[in-house]
Amino acid sequence: MIEQVSLHRILKSTALKKSNLFFLLFLFVSIAMQASNVKGDVHENATTEEPASDTGETPYDPTEDIMHHIADSHGWHLFDWKGREVGIPLPIILYTEKGLVVFSSSSFHHDLNGEHIVEAKGQRFINFHDKIYYASEKASEKGSYAQFNEMTHAIDNKKPWDISITKNVASLLLSAIIILWLFLSVARFYKRQETHSSPKGVAAFMEPIIVFVRDEIAKENIGPHYKRFVPLLLTFFFFIWINNVMGLVPLFPGGANVTGNIAVTMVLAIIVMIVTNINGNKNYWSHIFWMPGVPIAVKPLLAVVEFIGIFTKPFSLMIRLFANITAGHIIVLSLISLIFIFETALVSPVSVLLTLFISVLEILVTALQAYIFTLLTALYIGSALHEEHH
Amino acid sequence: MTGSIAALGAGLAVIGIGIGIGQIGGHAMDAIARNPEASNKISSNMIITAALVEGAGLFGIVVSLLK
Image 1 (cartoon, one colour):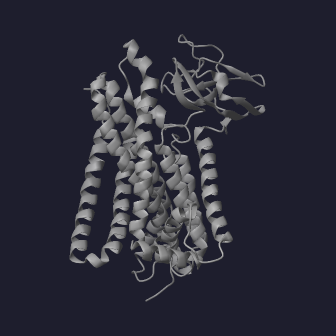
Image 2: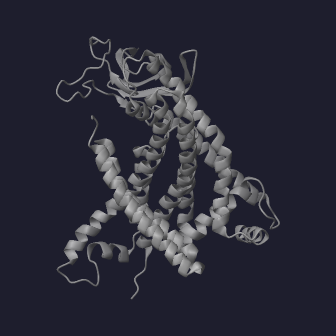
Image 3: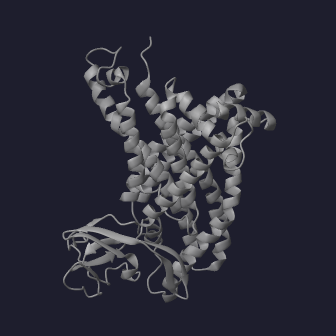
């Protein structure tokens, strides 16, 4: 109730509609973020790629470089200093045949080609393109301990179970801290407040968004029993939004591609699937297995289609978020790699301006994808709770 | 010319999304022009439909990414 009253005041005083306020907030965030974003992107690419273009032996391969940048990694690369990589080493935790093995990723000395062996508990490990394998007995001609299948060219080495704290995991923990801080400070504000004053500080920033998720997403699409699902929807919204935004920041606290990782979006989608189906009422299941109001011959056919629908709905949620965020990162990185493809600094103004444009667009996409994911979740839950009517 | 034919697939998928979202956006603008009062409802529905169309197209793009 408190929320409602104070929000009402803001809305009256500023004469802004809820949705307009919402988008204004995004605009502020976007302007603040822009400067660091573009600079960082150029810097990051320039430093990692200079050695390759200097030698001039192999033509620059943008695909490999871009895939390396959007993939997860075992260390958090910050910048290069006098030709040496500077970064935060992250712990590598492996579940091997001889039990748990823990060591720092710095013991690989930035080697990604499987040339450097780390020994632990009598086992030898190599890091090949940020995946940990058991090293093979002998090195190949190139000095790599990775062995390849002659037919498929896939790596032949065995892999231990890798439960390391990678860059994505570290970034997830970081965003969890941010989200906890945001929500705890909002909660603290409302706990302390005795009169119905308008919110201040973090609460003033968060309240319109929280009320937007509650009223425009949950209440609108779930129906009368929406209250139970508001915490879930709020968590989805802020988790996706904050991780999307952090993915756009190329400097240290950001830069990991968390929501562009299909495993992360898969877990989110599985949560949606479980929540939808355990809350499904009789009406929901009858619409899946015995659709009312259609000829009896069509019912089994529709049952098959609707049953597949249980899985395709979360699947599309997973793909949508993953592909949108990954595509955004790929576009930004490809525009920057134009400089290295043409091998001239003259392209850089064009490249930077296009990156700026795409980054602004991406900031819209960060919020939009969080909104769509939450909205569709609410719609699916709403359909599961929908009561029969004729 | 070297390269993967997967890029063609991605391009074709994008044509589909482009037509679909263009239609949705165009008709939504039309609807808002006819009934500006309902613009909030129309735009949120527009976003949902656009997301569904885009999702279908993204399947194509992801497949061509995986090649």
